[in-house]
Length: 636
Image (cartoon, rainbow, N blue to C red; front, side, top):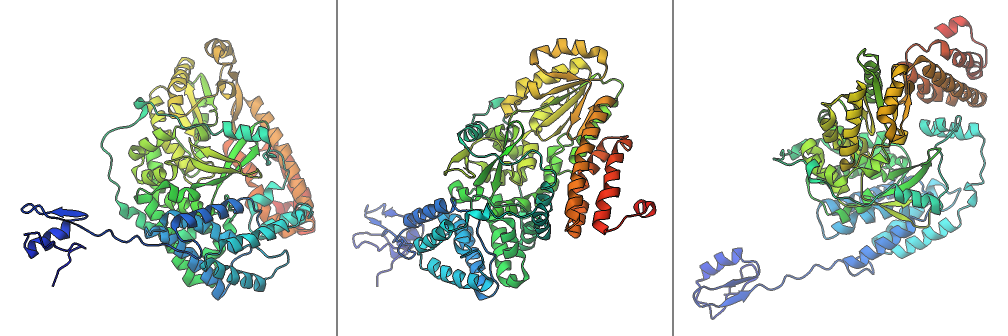
C-alpha cells in the first residue's frame, strides 16, 4: 500500500526509507529532493476554492458588483425604514453579523465583506412608499433578503433606483411650521438639531459648486514626507492585547446609545444602528451582532489589517459648512466607524489623557476648554506677564503631517498606535455631499467628525508642545495655542513655533493670531517687535468663547452675547405657546448652556445678564406655564 504524505507519493526510483519519507513529507511544502539518489517529487497543487454567489462566479465578480451597488447607493437620498420586528428582522440582523464575521474570521470573502455590509443596509431598508407601514416593510425586507441570498444585487438595486426616482421632490416642498419642526426633533431626542432652529445665524450648509469643490480640495492637501528630526525613534513599548478585551458586546451597545447624528456616505444614521443594537425585540440576534462588532474593533486595534478591506469603513461624507467668512470641511463618518471609535476611546481614555499631558486640554479632559481659559487668565493676571499670544493655525486638523503622527504615535501612546495606523495608513475617500460623485482624498491630518480625531490630534501635537515648553508658559486646546509672559519671551516662542510647527503640519497664521498686551504703553514696543507679521495687537480679545484682557472689551463682548440670547428666548417663547413641553425640555437640555459656559469662564458679569433674566421671567416662563409667575416662585 502506497503512503501519501501531505500530498506526496514516494517515487519508485527513490531509495529513501518509507519512514524517512513520511518525516520529510511533514515539513515539505512544494518539493523535496532525495540527497542520495537525487530523485525529486512535487506536491500536487491544491485546488483553488471556488467562490460563487448567485450568477457571480468569482470573488472579483462579487467585488465588481459590490462596487457598482455602492456607487449607486451614494446617489440616493435618505429613505429608510427601521428594521421590523419578528422573524424577518432577526434574519436581517443575523446577516449583518455573518457579513462582519466574514472579515473577522479572515475568510476568502475578507476583502469584500465590509463593502457588502455597507451596501446591505440601505439596499434592504428602502422605504417602498411615503405612507408604507410596518407590515409592508416586513414583506419587502423578506423579498429582498431572498434576492440577496441568491446574489441578485441587480434586482435589488433596480428596485431601489425606481423608489429613489419616484421620491417626491417635496420632501423639499413639504413646509412645516418652526414649532412643529422643533417639536418633532425634540420628540426624537435630537436636542442639538432642535436648538439649532433657534436664532439661526451662521454655520449653515454651503451650496456645492465648482468654487466650493476647489476650496474643499485646497483644505485637503496631498501627503508630505516627514522631516527626520521630528520622528521619534528608539525602543517601542509592547502593548498587551488583553486590554482590548474590554471591548465587548455590552460596550458596543453603550457606545451605540451614546452615538448620535446623521450617517456617512450610505446615510445610515445613528437611529438605525441604535434600533438594531439596542431594541429589546432583537435581544438574541443583536447580542451576536454586537459581539461581531466588538471582534471587528479588537482586530483593528491589535493586528495589521489590509487597508483596502476596511476602506469603506473609513470613508466619509464631506459637508462644507459656512464659517462666515470661509469654509469648514466636516467629514461625517459611517455610524459603525463612530461606534467602534467610541469603544476604543472609552477603553483608552485614561491612556490618551495621561500621554497627551496637561498642556493639551482637548484629549477628553472634563472641562478641558474651561481649564485652558482659566489657565491663560491666571497667566494674564500675573504681575510679570507683559503679553499673551493667541495663535490661530491654518487648516490645522486637515494639515497635520500624518506620516509623523503615525510614527510618533507608537511612542507617545502605544495602545492607540495600531488602530490609528490601520485607519489612517492610506488616504481615505471623502464623498462630497450633494455633488455629482466628487471624491476628495484625505491624505493628511484627521477627519473632523472621527471619534479619535481630537484625542489623536492632542497626541500628535505632544512632541511639538514638549519642544516649546521650556521657553514660556503655554496651554493648548486642539489647534488653539496660547503663550504668555515677557514680551521678548513671547516673541522667542512665536519664532520657534513658526520654524518647527510646519514640520509637524502645524502652520501658524499670523494674520489671524492676536497679541494681547497688558500695558497700553507697551503696544508700540510690541508693534516694533511683531510688526513684520501683520498681526493684530490689542489690549483685549475673545479667547475660546471667553474674554481675555481689559474690561471694555469684556463688556462689549458680553453685551453682544446677551442681545443674541434674548432673541433666542423670544423665539423659544413663541414656540412655547403651542409646544410648551418641548420648549421646556430644550431650555433645560440645550438653550441655557449657551450662557452658562460664559458665566463660568468670564467673571463679574451678573449685571450684564439682567436683560436676559427679564426675557426669561416676563416672556418665556409665562408662555410655558400659561400664567404669570411671582417673584417668590422665580427665586425658588
